[in-house]
Amino acid sequence: MEVPFWNKEIETLDRSSLEKIQLERLREAIGWSLKTPFYSKKLAQAGIGSPDDIKGLEDLRRVPFTVKDDLRRSFPKGHLSVEMTDVVRVHSSSGTTGIPTVIYYSREDLERWTDLLARCIVATGAAPRDIFQNMMTYGLFTGGLGLHYGAERVGMTVIPISGGNTKRQIQVMKDFQTTVLHITPSYLLHIHSQLQADGIDRASLSLDRALIGAEPHSENTRRKIEELLQIQAFNSYGLSELNGPGVAFECVCRQDMHVWEDAYIVEIIDPETGENVEDGQEGEVVLTNLIRQAAPILRYRTRDLAFLHTEPCACGRTHRRLSRIRGRTDDMLIIGGVNVFPSQIEEKIMKIPEVATNYQIHVDKKGALDRLIIKVEIYPKLFLGEASKLDALRQHIKEEVRSSIVINPVVELHEPGSLPVFEGKAKRVVDTRPQE
Ligand code: AMP
Ligand code: ZN
Image 1 (cartoon, rainbow, N blue to C red):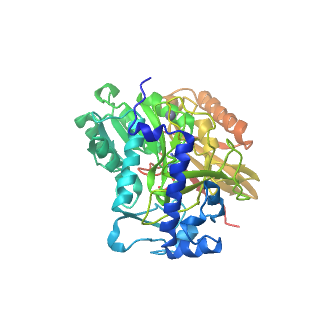
Image 2: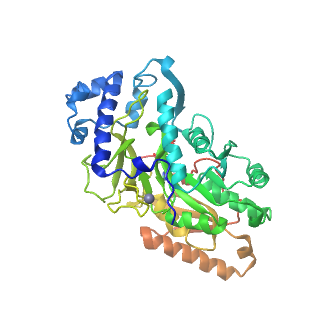
Image 3: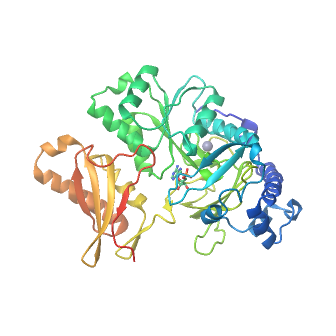
């Protein structure tokens, strides 16, 4: 297997050299942070008044966590470390969970971020010869512009189409013979159903890779995407507070995502106690940005749940790999007293071949009891067969889900195109239970 690199020296650095860079950059990041009203106060409380107070990487643990609400409270400029005249771009979180937060970038910040994205893109095997259709939303959301500049830096031909208008997307794929897509997994599945509905032959397209991210998805969803579209799909993880995409990305091995450890320090903590967990254990991802001056961020609690692999990757990169995100500490549902992550349901239904490309999870109350309703789209031809086959399929889906979450769901089968479609991040869960 050929392993392409953007910056082989950095990507394969031995651990101690990597940690040396981390320490230097952490001190720098502390210096930048101390220039912000928000961190100067927070760090002073922890007895950190100068970068020299950081003697080793272990001193990072003295730094208090930052949470989303801190960023909201310090809105608009409490976490800005430079003059506004030195800020060349502003982005904002899409507000996955409420009021957005704002992020500032200096020219050097954008330069460093773009370089990381070039690294991510090349790690997937994409190259200057590729035609790159960027179907992530452009705008305040970091997904569109972030990858845009990375792709230009690699030298690919970039089509900055942004999200939405599915028929046009498909036409553009044909017209320019697009080879690489950047897209959310849910929208990519929708693209497939549109291709089917329009009777478009896959052979008329030249797709060979999709960079998929911005929302949780299971390994079974990736497989489904790869099988249906006959492409390779690479998981891409990031969040605006930490620049945006490019925090962690899959390489050609497609066995979870390298976190660029010269740019980010990744920790996994127990979300209840805040303590760092043992290597390899699952917990909440905490990230420190080592490369952003204008809006530094230290020990950010992402609320995303994942673990770090302890084994090295076959590609030769030394930067550790983050697992697929299993869910967020705040997207866990409690249904009839049982803790359920939507990803557990997704994983089960997406491996069933009769299930098409869209689904929704509803939770409501029937009398005093919580009720879980799973709505799945299935292929239209199945509706033409015997009713007993549909009953058997419903039963099969029910049992698959129950085997994972111990709850007996109601399963509804729908025709393709009947459930809501999302062109950006999908909203799969509809919880109509009265708030306690
Ligand atoms: P935003 O700041 O709006 O870009 O949203 C970032 C959040 O999107 C992350 O904290 C994750 O919860 C989610 N996210 C982004 N990429 C992925 C991914 N590859 N897998 C799972 N969740 C993701
Ligand atoms: Zn690798």
